[in-house]
Length: 334
Ligand code: SAM
Ligand code: SF4
Ligand code: SF4
Image (cartoon, rainbow, N blue to C red; front, side, top):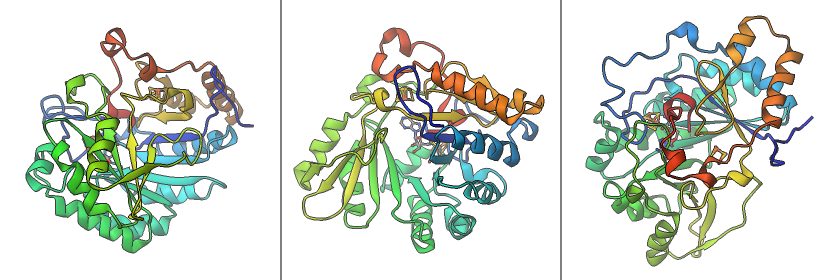
């Protein structure tokens, strides 16, 4: 039975972080100063196993979930993540997607497709090598990600989505080159406002390039018009090029929050359930799983949490809320 929360929002999407590790150190997510050589990541036994994840996913499917996105950290760093995809793809009526930084995609795309992955989103913040290296902070060149995108195309994981986080003074000059590059490609480029997730990325409002400014920048060179949302809870505003060059998305989580339609539940890599990206506290499901809770008990527990949900962080964002301690993005995924 589908369930709704305190604001009548149905439960529709599940995001699962399969690892807290990443081979990038994007300053807006895992800044090197915090996630340095001595940072301690979760030991293997702390991670939910594939069987535990699949069991929770099955229970959530019975509560209305229709879309599962694997994320991280970098999900392709989780060993044999394709085995998990195969297990999840066996659940009826569920779309399986993944968000990745693309570095391992050239090797993995066909394997992921064969395992049953339906859709993939590849993050790419610039086409200019110097800017991209500045953003990933581990010296990975743009070509590595472009090779991953090509492999995903060849494997038939299309249409792809490409995520670009825009940070003023760093990569706002790359908005137009990125738009031109993906215009006519069939892929959907999505510009994301730099968000105040976590407590370590030094977020400042003056570094946010608003959705309005992004749309105006593109429209000044390549005319676009607004489209209707595909479904309730879609995070991106959809636009199309008036010349038929395809679609783009703009995710205005800071300047035009969309909590009113937020249908997403998240699991951290160690099995904590979060009802909001900006959660301060998760609900420990791993303990319940490992203490022998029955499917019915887990079902009831999760239903109760969702039904009591009142999250609307982005709409209520204020000086007071932005100073609260928050879970890191790399811990619960985007
Ligand atoms: N490592 C994978 C990747 O980068 O695609 C998956 C995890 S990452 C946390 C998921 C998405 O969140 C990425 O597209 C990333 O660019 C985005 N993201 C991370 N930190 C962000 C921030 N502070 N503001 C906006 N988007 C952010
Ligand atoms: Fe890694 Fe993705 Fe975070 Fe960048 S955004 S540090 S690639 S988890
Ligand atoms: Fe959903 Fe929380 Fe983001 Fe609002 S702030 S859209 S409730 S995840």
